[in-house]
Image (cartoon, rainbow, N blue to C red; front, top):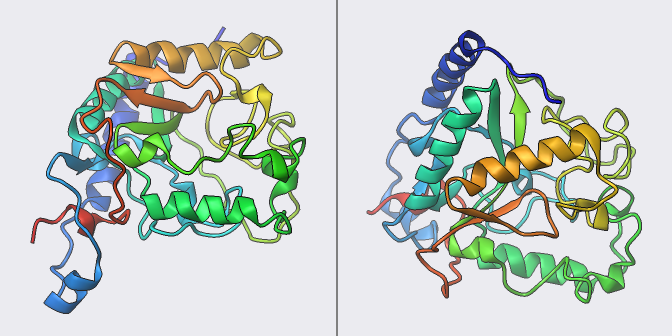
Length: 275
């Protein structure tokens, strides 16, 4: 079973995380008119930065970096900020409060995803010669099968603003090293001690692992790994989140505010400004 931290440790962790989050949410200096015009389309008023709803939730926005299945920063990810519809962010705040009492924190990998980022994924998937990240993210899947097997699609629920990819981190969170482009890769389903270091609990695979082992209830996942997946799924379910069975990290808050709209504003705090 998973070890539970006491309330005092959780309060200390909450205080430290809140201080860090407050520093990261300092108001930005207003951009001149030309810069604002170049920033692209704006988010509707129903979208917020997750840190404004809960500054204690950890962020590891992978698509602003080269540590993802493409191997480079993804189009539309201008800043490592998590943007979501307000009800989704508020529901995550409630889930976070539940986990903090047990000595854990949520950590988000991806939140709102612009359509231009999805288009980037599609272009990459169609280029069968680019397999630079295969060894880590899809070692057992032929790249020509990514569309047919459902790993890549032309539309994503993330673009509607109520879907989030996330995990659980034991507190106090450990500092992990950054990914170095070109470093040797290890399969995402390898034992946790061998995979790229992540401060999360062991979920049996890494994030964005294109493998059936990533299916939330895959019977090969047992012991502490299965317990960790259940903790994430059951905690989020209490607050209206529905898990995608093929990805232990993928959850959508229901009902969605924009069930039929796929947005394309950039992932940036400027997208949330109204001027």
